[in-house]
Image 1 (cartoon, rainbow, N blue to C red):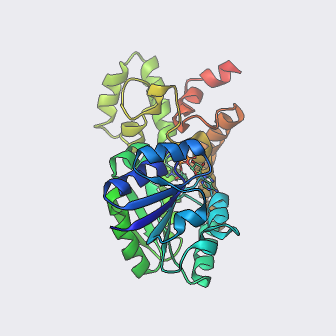
Image 2 (tube, rainbow, N blue to C red):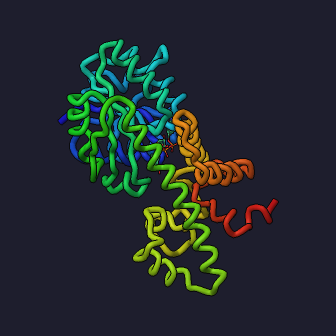
Image 3 (cartoon, rainbow, N blue to C red):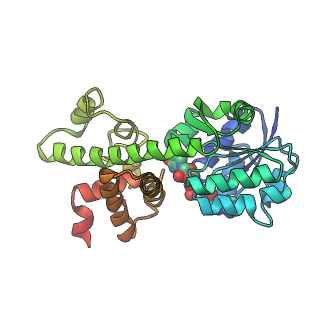
Length: 300
Ligand code: NAD
């Protein structure tokens, strides 16, 4: 069994690291938030007080942080991973971050003698808990193969994507589609209700029809239909509106870099921005249904 360091024990990292501990690995965790650290401890992760402590003697270090700026601080900072880890430690960043930041991390890690992969995930908090995430892994083939062995207890699918940063490229495109699907699911759900359809009857139809999507099956924004949906818990976050807006923003900047119009993505980004402007950045992104039914605008 391996020694694994884990940095970032939030909605995703908490459950993912617990699955590594459950698989028998010796997992040490670090998070700036003491509540996240305490919750991870109940999942079998040993709390560490610093990055230096969490990377000491680790065979692999995973990071699961909100944005590129956090990942850069954790890897490149004076008290960070590159400063304290041994170069035999394999570095695996599972955060969803911009391609430029991922490239910076790959380059800095290589210059310091480390092997590093970008390995973002799809599957949400429910997939993190169940150990059924999809990992998309970019980097040098030997490092990708070695990372896949550590990833296995957390994943239903581990898919090599190619060279450095290609995992992030796949993730950004996937989440563009997810967040558009979620917005369209919210609109369909509201209109179905207003046309007098029972919420469960409509969901039963759409989930076996051409309106189906992962968002519909996992995050249905109407309460009392899908057990994994944040709508059942007053939109307590499984994936915050702020992180959703970050991801669709990553797609927009990638589109600008590649001369891609992204008309639908740009429109949907404005919807997530409106949630944030209304003070709901910390709520679940499926709260976008409050724009589809007009209740957020009416509450102003
Ligand atoms: P989160 O905000 O719940 O967790 C992030 C954790 O990182 C927090 O506990 C925070 O305290 C910690 N952190 C931030 N800066 C730190 C630092 N410098 N040192 C140590 N800890 C630090 O976010 P999440 O929902 O778990 O998402 C994490 C990443 O995974 C994001 O990039 C997100 O886009 C991606 N993601 C999320 C989901 C989802 O459904 N929630 C699904 C797939 C991918």
